[in-house]
Length: 210
Image (cartoon, rainbow, N blue to C red; front, top):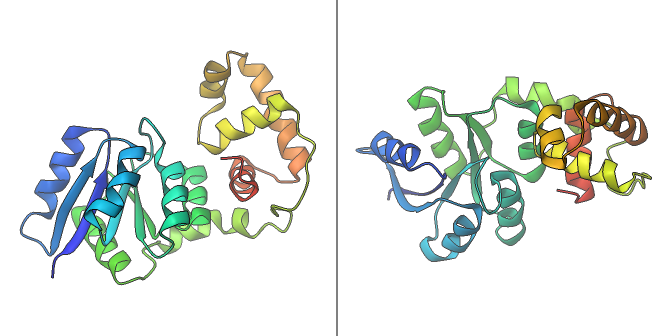
C-alpha cells in the first residue's frame, strides 16, 4: 500500500516538483492544497497518512494549520516543509507536535525518509534540530499558567515574533518603527523571563497566543 500524502503549499511549482519527486516511489500524493484552510478541509476528504505543510501560506500559515490539525487529528503525522531554517519555526513545530521539519533545499532522500518515518509513527526530527530548540522547550518559566502583564502592543509584537517575523517585518506589519519593535521585544523577553526570541515564541504557543 502506498503512503497517502497530502501536500499543502501555495506555490504550484513546488507542488509539481513534489509530484515529480515521489513518482515511482512508495508515496502517492492524494491531495494538494494551496492554503491552510484548504488543507484542513481536505484531510477528512482524502484521509492522508502524512501531511506535508509549508509555513508561509495565505488563509492560515502552516504552523497555525498544524496546531488546528493536531487538535482535531492528534494521531495524524504532519511534517513541516519550509524554505526557512528558522529556530523559531522549528521550536513552534516541535511544541505543536509536528513529526519533523524538512527544508526545501534538503536532498530528495531526506524528504522521502522523513515521510516514511512519520508514516511509521516515529519522530523524523534530526538531533541537530532538537538540540537547537531543547533550551527553549525545557525552560521552566515557559508555563502556560504563568500570567504575564503584557500590554496590548506587546501582545501584538509577541504574536508576530512567534510567527517568525523579523523586527523589520514586525515594524512593517504593525506600522511602527524598527526601534519601537526592538524596545517591545526587550520588554517581552524580560517580562516572560526568557533569554531569546525562540523561547518567547514557545511560550506564546503554549499560552495560546498564536
